[in-house]
Length: 103
Image (cartoon, rainbow, N blue to C red; front, side, top):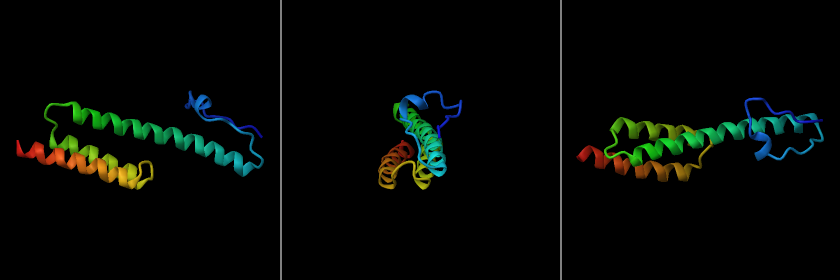
């Protein structure tokens, strides 16, 4: 059985080594893993860019910081980001939120 990659995942063949599956269920799991990994990577990239936007702005708004915290919570809930890492990032953002509200 061969594993086909969806056309939306342009660079998936370069990143994920495609091994020949022995069973139909293993082939399906391999396809699911590729799709899930690509989606998770896009979520992590979005989180990273949101956090950079907050950090790089001179005075981030409270709504902006809350949006990043919410996105981190969602990613942690779905297992994309480890819960301890999410808590650490949220603590740093909450410190920035308190500092922003004092000014």
